[in-house]
Image (cartoon, rainbow, N blue to C red; front, top):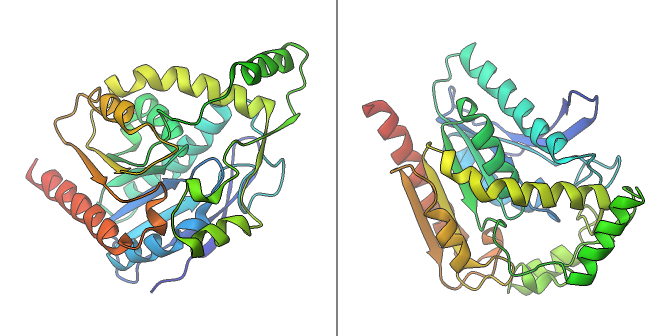
Length: 291
């Protein structure tokens, strides 16, 4: 199986984003996947599936979000929602440019897990020219884990007195929320790169992303894939299924894995899950050739 290279991407504000990039041995690749992780996770959580996708002929560009994972500077901080969105747009723009100047004609897919789906939907709506498909795995757009009324009051007060760098605990302390597998619960519990706190400004950015995603789906016309975990205790699957219906594209597919807890990467049947994803990618490529 292919090992990743740790690469660096310099954002427009000179923040140095670190990430893992998997490149298949055969050229050109079948397609390129730009991947976004969840609020607590990072690219290191998803090495197994990324290797399998790479072995299937896809290039995977998985840069950790600023302040997360491999990026130790300004942990949990984002100045505003546009900064987070712009990071993704810049990554996609670079990959799209590389496509145009090479013999790589495969699709460019924006893939996101959990919280990262918020960013992905906003980017897909703002810059449809940069992607050929959108894959959202257990998307954290409609969630069961929500801030309390008191926490919302605290956030509003913090905004008013401009303490944007004050850190707040992410309400996902229990590894059992992510997986029922004990091995991976221990992995999450002991992961030194996992993010456990975010700043007030990050939460304000998150709130704005929530507002924008509510209507963003209606403008996304590229092929869309949703993969849901049937036993999810973080994502509200019923509300997510209703949100899925907002996408106007005819090329959309929703798959649910009844016994999965949240993070599909940690499920015993993850080989089948990756195979299902590859099948969707293959169908997308075939439809592009026909059109």
